[in-house]
Length: 244
Image (cartoon, rainbow, N blue to C red; front, top):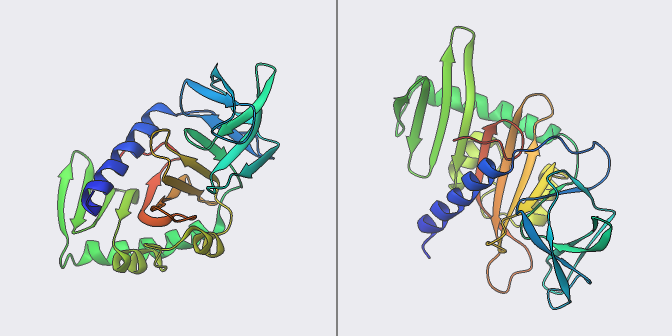
């Protein structure tokens, strides 16, 4: 699959997840899991070959007292569902990990400065309107804003280009491996893996000072233990609430 086709597939996954997974806030302390699928396999062990029972997943957050990685570096979450203890694989689970991100807030300030420069002088960018929203696009990147009497409201940004990522966010996240992302940004607010895309990991850093989320999509290639960043997004709302 080409990189462009892969990104279209990833974007579809993200949009589908955001539509289907609106939920209340998780508890502020500890690790908590939210199932993104209505039915999942609850395994006896943290092993895909272990025995399992199909379980209806609760709509609320599930406490995760511990998590382990298997020999393929996939995460497994220790949970109790309807009185039955077991292990859920990372596929189809959103895991609440940490709090709001000051690092993401700092990145946003850099983004605003870069975005303003493009709005003042388009260069290779083009702009168009979709209702109240103004859309700015160039090869491999897009951002959306609403202009009003009280200023500009940021709605959405995405890129898969390292140069634009570096220019807008002040750090080149594209192609970074997950350990380096964590060293740059700290603990994510949330992480998830789509049910049918085990090679994809989405790290979400909810901004500490506003209702926005920095989302980093990684893909793990054959033979790799860690994921590599293929897409960076910044959107209005909490994790999973992106509507563009």
